[in-house]
Length: 546
Ligand SMILES: Nc1ncnc2c1ncn2[C@@H]1O[C@H](COP(=O)(O)OP(=O)(O)OP(=O)(O)O)[C@@H](O)[C@H]1O
Image (cartoon, rainbow, N blue to C red; front, side, top):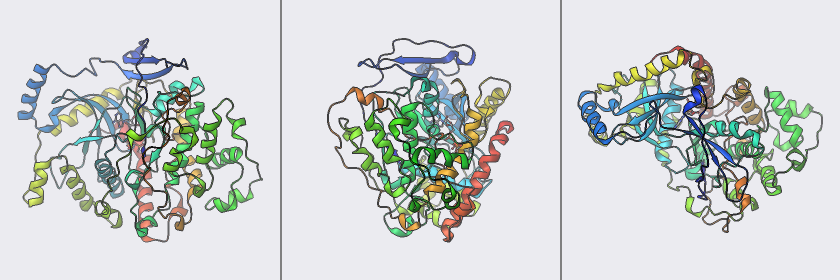
């Protein structure tokens, strides 16, 4: 799933900046004043520092290039600057590409093959990101070649560097009553290449300095091919992303999570408090609890969200339909009257279909060595010469001397972070961690702990009968919706989507998720293991060294 974002007015009026104390000294808060006089927005942006320098002086750069290339091989190309995030699967560091001076983000995924399910998730993600090239999807620039084809354990994935994520931006802007990230409206998605993300949340929406949003973390995503057999393997339809978008949209409008449930039951209570009890046909898995619930009428959205654009509320109601069948597809959402006057013709998603062959592995039970080989093959896509050799059958062992040095850089940074730097990303568990300099969320611990519960609650309502997964919503939107002029209203149409506190994660722990079909069973089993890695990983990685 990708955003269909539109280029409107960029943030360009940085009227002031200020430095903050301590760890936040290097964070510039940029105030943007929209021409139409609406409220200012704040966008965290890194300032050049010794730890996060501007692109290098060309002389130094070429010296480094010569030096590192001959002496250390590929890994020495990147100079890691600082740890900027942490997820269940790895640590993310900012680095400078000494070849280009470009700043990049390098995700270090360690012990990839500890669990086959984790490795499969990583394979899926790197494959999708390669195939799904789109301006609204974070780009993999490179994947470092492992030192050994048959024994490698770690992977270094080089991404374009993003400045922040939507979760942080929402935290910083929540006092504003609404979030006007930018005069771009970057809303709504289309199913480019029929991909469902299934884990949309603010932390998985990265933002760059211009407040362009890009989706990351496709580890739970699925590609739907047009033939029915693959579609029915999945318990979920594209409507799962639409629900997440609705939650994020509400959060953008109000600055607060829409359903901040403390556990599954509380989550369901909050959902039904607002929307009323769902109609019987929308209840599947949570049938017992929902059926026994006292009948509640829905609360009018205009009452719950006073002072919000009625058009926005009408759209929100469509997105948050209890029954997935009642939600609009992404393409339909884009034609909602809320978007009249905003053109997205210049930002059409890519429509290149993804070959089914690329995802054959999803249908097989893979052994560790199979996944390793598939990941290795995927990595070779970033090493064309090696790929050719591999395809000719001659490539077996590769050796890149620089990897050890690179590992040491990461280990050093992690150790440094472990020694009492305040607000470090390593203090959290479970969910992805944000930039260290962005003020910590007040209720973060609860939010993180609640994520899975919310997902379970939402997916309890979500999982439609298998016959619903007919792929009918996977249309690529047509060009030219909503042509017209920009208006002040577009300021409210801030980049939304992704739902952090909302939901969007598959109910990995729900035993009822296990389908009759063997394929689905394997998938869910695998994701259960993935969840267990997620649960254990937060603690582990805090002390683990590369
Ligand atoms: N390209 C990037 N630029 C800047 N920061 C990034 C980038 N990619 C990831 N990050 C940061 O690192 C964090 C973790 O990354 P990511 O979500 O990809 O890891 P993960 O292990 O898949 O996480 P999760 O626990 O959500 O599955 C993100 O929340 C973000 O803060």
